[in-house]
Image (cartoon, rainbow over all chains, first blue to last red; front, side, top):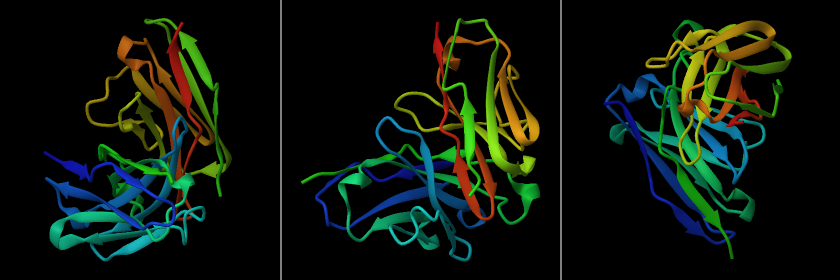
Length: 124
Length: 108
């Protein structure tokens, strides 16, 4: 079964660092991009950035560039999203999702598998 | 950045009725990269339609997508109770994904 399993909920204080993870299984981890999507409470979906574990290529939304870092360790089929200094406004649900075909359009078939989400709460 | 606008914001319908959801882009979008997702409360989004009109695996044929250029439509031919949810369109262009703000389909 193809799955993305995300790490558990986090409660942090402003200024703290954080790294959340997304472990892929049941497919070739290095053949798909992993995207990160933010959903603030009661709000819509926002694409943050993505990584291709095959060669660690990354793309970021201008809104999130410099605010977060996406990484991947293909040896453990895990992608990560990290913050160096959290703000209260980072409080949200964060989803990872896999996709392919951003370089070769003929392979694009949407973000077809999603993680269950990781809730991040930042509060003093 | 391409901005997606979805209308209406909320669509109130009864089971069995037809739902027509609109997604309009601020500039022309590649149909290959126009995608629709469904999200229910407390759940991750679910892929419905990719390439503007191709149903994802396991998606019932009451869901269909159409459109090109700047105007795209998701149609649900006959609403089932499990279809009441929020629907998002998404596009990819210039190495960026953007989502629309969503249309909530609720029970009338």
